[in-house]
Length: 318
View 1 (cartoon, rainbow, N blue to C red):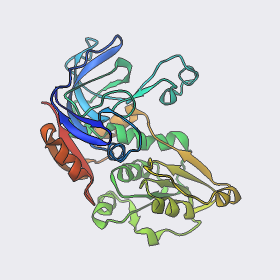
View 2 (cartoon, rainbow, N blue to C red):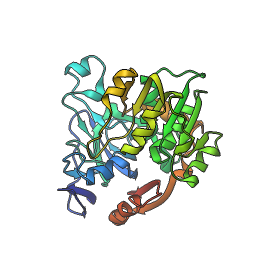
View 3 (cartoon, helix red, strand yellow):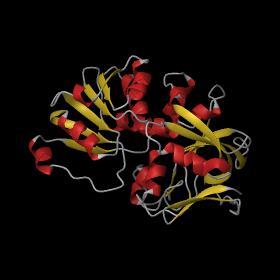
View 4 (tube, helix red, strand yellow):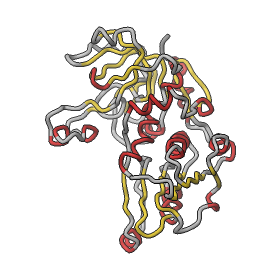
């Protein structure tokens, strides 16, 4: 089969990859669409020493698996867990000590014609959700994880830093809580997507120091972190949604003095993410900037790394 293969920080289109055979408890999924994520781009830059097929945001059709799933469209949670380590036993599955992660850690990903995932990871896509829209399930779930970790109330002042793919989804999901929300970024055309949904936006100079109860950093760069940090009141909460390819320098003393709570946040719940898409409460169509066939995957990655580009999709199957 064909797939985009990463090795030694070099990406290539391979046509000689064997179609995987699902082990017991797993399903074989024929991939239809997949989205290029910032994590994929950071893997190219050496964020983690991964070798294999990239990609973890996908929609596919089950070809081998339980009867109720065969020939059905599905999305999939990306962490495949052991079920018996201390984290699995305590219900913290995304931190399984022995996990593999689709397209990230020891498991071939979605930028190939087929993938395998545990049956328990798969979720049916509602009939009224188009395939290209459903590719956003994983990042929407990641955005919803913030609300699993931090109690949010209508009187909370919340800042989202970053107008990229993740920042847009984080802002849309947080807006549903009724909080006092401000999303800031560098690109007026991107911020316009949020303004069209009634979300207050601005540039960095719109951020009032010490004003916010919660800030969410979605840029993955030191400048974004600095904005999110200075925005917080004492005993505020700083949520990090981005991974960083390099090391991040910070003023640890100020975190201590202001008693700032720092929270890392990544994978989240799929069921409510699909529900938001099915009910139209999240709009992802403006985020899709282009779709490429898999055979043009290298060009797709080049496009995805261009300044100002949001989501690039790969069309892998029909």
